[in-house]
Image: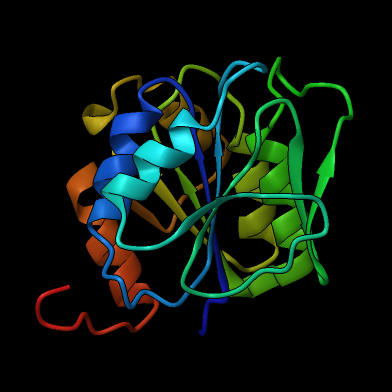
Amino acid sequence: MTFELIVIGASLGGLHALCTLLGGLPGSFAVPLAVVQHRHKDSDNTLREVLGRASGLPVYEVVDKQGIIGGAVYLGPADYHLLIDQEGFALSTDAPVLHARPSIDVLFESAADAYGPRVIGLILTGASADGAEGLAAIKARGGCTIVQEPATAECRVMPEAALAQTRADHVVPLPLIAPLLIQLCHIVPKVGT
């Protein structure tokens, strides 16, 4: 299977987890990554800047109708749902889901509809059940599902909720998630990247 998109959801403890994950991917990683990290609706662009420093890939905060290009990390903006369709990204101000906007479920379910078996869904640390339904949608459409090993999560509620909802394809400790994504996407890191 050739994967064309990776969607990632994180909440409490997500900053550390995302920095670890993105820092483990080579600058040659070509599959686009779309990230929803729960944060306050008035958050500034500090998250994008921190993730950009941790990653060898460019990190963009998504604008409405933005196209999806490989080799980049796309971050859902504060107070907007991030959705994916065949044309690219869309933003929405629909009601929060499980008290969250952006919602991981909204991103994952739209990615499952648009990409089917060509998407990887990844649930990281967090303190809510957001993402569990979305990961199940990805699994139901034939996509690949990954959950951070709860024991390695700063808050294990979100990974455990996902595992209660879906039989994940991979349950791995945080430090091994980037190597797994590299393996699944058949990317050979260049020496020195």
